[in-house]
Structures are given as structure tokens and as C-alpha cells.
Length: 235
Image (cartoon, rainbow, N blue to C red):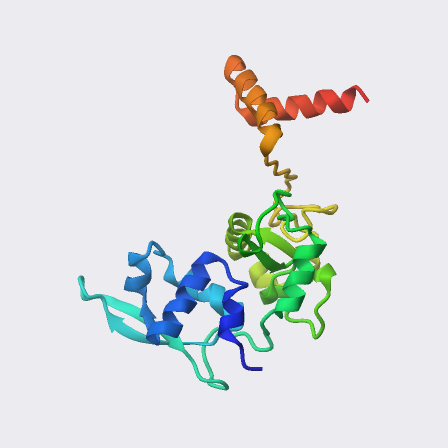
């Protein structure tokens, strides 16, 4: 299926969106140009696009300053064989994206913070690289993530052992897939995680925690854990 790049742009985080915009505007972009924009890990940026079904052609070029070899990326033609491409990936329809945002009440599923639509990404709970693409768009298989947590999840998934194993069961029980459910690990680490964001009137409560932590000479996370433990023991 041919990907509608304009539609895909609306669903991408800043890093892959920037690269795709450059490819659409200029026809090609080099690792040097991406580095100038602050993206030193160009292969990771390219991988972000590949995992969204974008086929990339890669050729060798020369760094304009050092003369060393560098990669130059361009959009491949439909049907062209390209290394590392993923077949079967389709762009998320706008109507389904809106359905996801409504389902999650425009809140990030990790930090539960409310954002405008542009600041939220529709995310496969199980990464496409592991779970592949379903023929149907089912809300249960997706979540809304803010840009910050989308990037954090991408980094964790890139460095997770399951990237090579591709075991759907492992991904489907991970914190990054079900932060709103009974997860059993965080990227295959024996951890439990809770992400809290304080907004509006809640900021006063955060400042109280901050003040208490400073007085005790302890990290604010320790003070928060102690408060949670105390509250649980009193019930």
C-alpha cells in the first residue's frame, strides 16, 4: 500500500517528522545535515521512519568538512527492494487517530497529562517491529503518548533484548505497552514504575514534597515513596 506522507507526518514525533519533511522537500538528506539539526544518531532517525513503513534508499557520500564517508538518504520508489524496510505498514487514518485521542481523553497514557492533539502520538502498544501490522485498527492495540514518552519508549525498545527475540508476549506485558495495566517488567528489567505529573493546583503539593525532601536532604522520589508507603499502611 502506498503511504500518504502528508497524513503520516501528523502522526510522527519530532525526530522522524523532521527527517521526512526534509526528504519530501529536498529529495534527500545526509547524516551531516541531520547532525547539524542536533540528530547525531542518524541511523536511529532513519529507523524511526522505517518502522513506520517508509522505504528509504541509502547511498554513500562524503562529509563536507572531514571528507569521511557518510550516508545520504532518499525516499525509495514503491516496490523497490531496500535494506531494513518493513512491509505491510500502513499510515494511521485520521479518523482512527481522533478515536484514540477521544478514548484517552487527550491524555498521555504514561503520565496522564492532558495535551493538545498535536502533542500526542498514536502508538502501537506492541512495537510494529515485534508484533507486525494488524489488518484492523483496534483501539485496544494502541495508546496515546506525549512526545516525551514516545521518545522514551522508542529508546527503550531500541535497546531491549526483545528487539532481536521478537516475542509478542514479552512486549505485551511490558510497562511501555500497558502503563495503564498490570505490567510485569520494564523493557525486560525487574522494575515497577509510576510517572506522576503535577499540574494547576497540584503544583502546591509538589512544592510541599520538594520542601520536605530538601529539609531531609533526600531525593524527592524517596519522600514521595515514603508518603505512598505511609498512606498504604494506614489503610
